[in-house]
Image 1 (cartoon, rainbow, N blue to C red):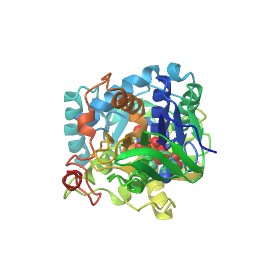
Image 2: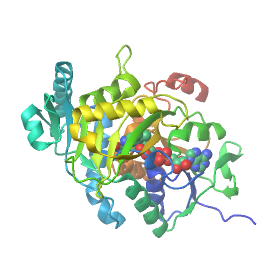
Image 3: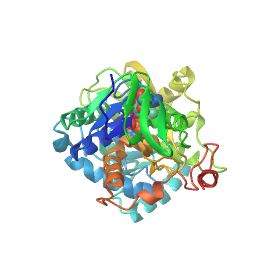
Length: 403
Ligand SMILES: Cc1cc2nc3c(=O)[nH]c(=O)nc-3n(C[C@H](O)[C@H](O)[C@H](O)COP(=O)(O)OP(=O)(O)OC[C@H]3O[C@@H](n4cnc5c(N)ncnc54)[C@H](O)[C@@H]3O)c2cc1C
């Protein structure tokens, strides 16, 4: 039996693929989403809940995050679902004098980039966030930071996409693309072919694998992260709490010569509406291995309970390990392939995919319709850019191959 053609096949039903499917269905496109597992099976189902502006690099990453954060203000109504969006602000705790010096200049850069952020001393930080240890020297605080429940977000995006006409196919692995000349004609999945002239690679940390099956070089690799999950607990934390070491772990691994903390450990603490604490986390390059490492989990527990001592009395019920889709420069790749007609990549959001979900849906829609309804970010999001790193394939090498 031949499958009716789709206007577009989206590969991946994480937050990114689901948001794209929703936005494209809204404009009347016939969308089929395929996932080798199910919605939320990837990074989107094993991550923290921060929509953090303070942790973004000034420049393009920050501008995109600010615009995406603004889109969250209306998302609950648009999706008609409770995604536990909370504009409760966020804090970065500072433990040492070295971190204080680093954070002073980081905060100054954030301010210049237009973020509302202030530096608090230890007592002021504890007044806002009573769970903090007495040794905390201070903190940066921004009311612009927010939170969302990523599992609820992923489910709500899928539901909205389906209501708008999209079809979700679980357990359908993308295997290959059928070409006519240099144009995509159909995708081959583990459960058959789907004719289409437009394919979107939203496979998150697997976008590199999916790209290579289609013959499209896609410099995205997995960066592993683990989080401890507690049983429901009375409220401990207000909004989201990071530590300065988290900011260093996030950015310093990409700075030549700079030293990142062991296992990339840095506190990321949030609490869901049901009281579950998400206590993170780590940042490591370990291929596609998603097994949680006991030593890493113990290091997360030790680090987090040093900053928030009351965590010592919290019962941990499980650990989540996910793979961040890493590009190396803090920006995703959103582009039409120069090599294969009808192939779009929309992946590589690393540790910011939840924060950047709303804007990614709009950018991909703009890329397809040719309209420009948001900032002019797309030219900078090409997979040919020079700043892509740690992928074994530089932007220059790809350009050479593409030319
Ligand atoms: C520990 C951790 C903490 C994080 N904390 C935050 C945070 O606080 N804030 C934030 O903004 N971001 C955070 N992130 C990052 C965020 O989770 C990701 O950037 C985001 O979830 C990526 O979404 P995605 O849809 O691109 O990928 P995914 O959610 O991984 O979705 C990709 C989908 O593609 C499917 N797939 C893969 N291969 C194939 C194939 N061959 N065929 C069909 N389907 C396929 C997978 O099954 C998966 O469902 C965190 C990530 C981790 C790991």
